[in-house]
Image 1 (cartoon, rainbow, N blue to C red):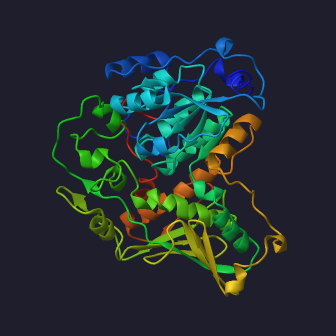
Image 2 (spheres, rainbow, N blue to C red):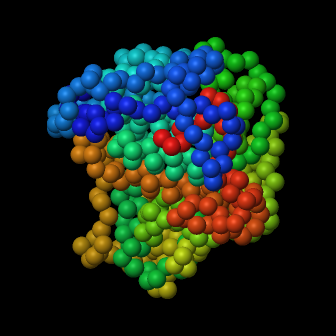
Image 3 (cartoon, rainbow, N blue to C red):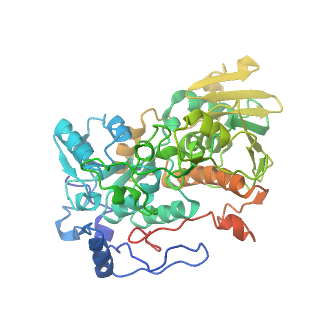
Length: 465
């Protein structure tokens, strides 16, 4: 698209390539060095995946910002259920391509949307008619393709949760800032008028000084030990496993919410703590005005959690209950506000208790006690939040203006971090101090061991980006 390259040209000439390290772990206190592109290319070829060629600046088109009538070429990394839900684009968007490790999914999208299909997203990122990408993959595949997209000069809409670990979330923030990309986190409850109003009521102190927030007691992920099944035709299962240790294919892993699906399993997800909690904690952060920080303490009632091991058919409700029952997480912010995870708490919002009342909102619905708090006319509110009602449109608008979207990468990272803190508290089973500026547990090696995770070659993250 002509005119989309204003910020892209600055970095496209010499984009650093993701390195391949001989290490199998990333120590949060010691960053691993980059390897040269030629070494990464050889490693990627060894696993049957072609390394991408980044388009040189000379062929990226004329510099300048897009005009009001320019169309944005969009591609999808991941072509499953969620990606298809995100294909209802504003008028200025056009679908150019889709990539999925399951070739049949990508081809189905291509046939329906009259676009190109890829099995390797990195080959897709070479295309100069792609301005931006949706990343709608399983959680363990969120950050790496988003970094590759930034390095290729593409803007990104990344489904929540932003990351699978705290450390990789910070690396993604660094990449977005370095390459001057626009990244919208899929925290679309920020674009719901009801939730926005609930946050405004809290921010305007209609309930007085907030001392407690109640939210749903989200389940943590399970462990998985399933027998192998036949890999479906067209699926690159090794690529699906990606940076995790390969396991035999099983549909109960591959499908997002089957019985139970990857969203319930380590190492592919943080469970519903990140799956739904990413929405809930995001709204708490927004309402409390904490978008660029986080809690300073986290603990769990009920002791250390021993996750369910899924080795035979099990219902998701039962497994999820076993991964949260009696293990209620608590957070404390530096200003004294306590967040409590309870079985009757809102799933995608919060119940905010203050010294003058209570405000509850979730999924766009707002209520209060006393009831007149929620009936306060908007014109009586001194503090107002941006009136965004379409999450994708906001992203498109920011692609053109180069402003930060309503769920910028830092916001998505901070919300996901709280989810990860909740899981870590359950796995460690004791009270933890958290430094939201340095993003470490001071003096706690055990807790810090969960801030990042091992990754197999050649799927390590570039660090620095």
